[in-house]
Image 1 (cartoon, rainbow, N blue to C red):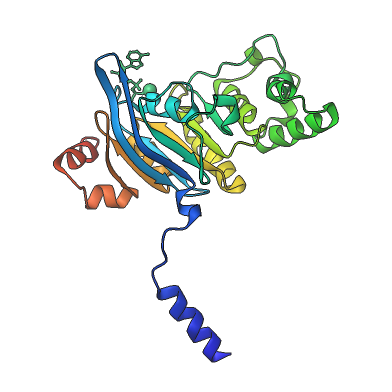
Image 2 (spheres, protein in one colour):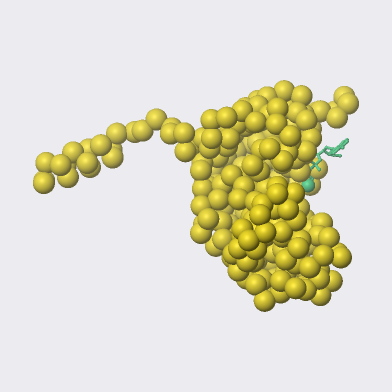
Length: 259
Ligand code: ADP
Ligand code: MG
């Protein structure tokens, strides 16, 4: 009815409090030092369920260390990581439900593509029929189904990186972290993989934190960007906000530096 429609419109105009979905991955006061040197301090950020966020910043600012801390590969000195309302800071990496893809795919050279992707499922003792099905599905998702029986040395760099991605995805992570996964690839392949990656991420609705030092890549791929300076997040926003409404001289300088 017209009344119900009007009331639905009115409801949609009321500002809603942030939902659990808008805080699917929460970083709360994360700090890390190596000896006397602080890498980052008091990092605060929320990522929504299904969101693609890029952590953008110059080399050495602490991006990789922050990703490793979220994955549990390095211990933090203070703060907490929360996923879907659950604190995971005390959990070992394999219990966090977080997948990670690195710049240099660490594939097993003596295993086929299929076995590389199946490896994690074997570790988790997934029965062979289910394993077969999940690996097949994941390989077709990354468009490698016709390469299942090849070995890594028979693949291009882009194909190898897709195997590395498949190896993470097959474990059905809640969060995907990617540390400069495209930086080692040549420009044409990189462009294609950006699109393919974004496509897969949207298809799965996968909450993703993607690291790059490449501003163009960040602007092209992300729902939001976290611009990182030395050891802290300078500004969070979409690409346009960072460009047109920089919160500080430092942000303006960084965003302008590539023009
Ligand atoms: P980014 O990925 O943004 O290039 P990193 O997280 O790799 O930055 O490094 C941030 C800083 O932490 C750098 O100064 C680096 O030298 C230092 N660092 C990284 N890992 C270690 C480590 N294992 N021991 C000591 N210092 C480290
Ligand atoms: Mg790095």
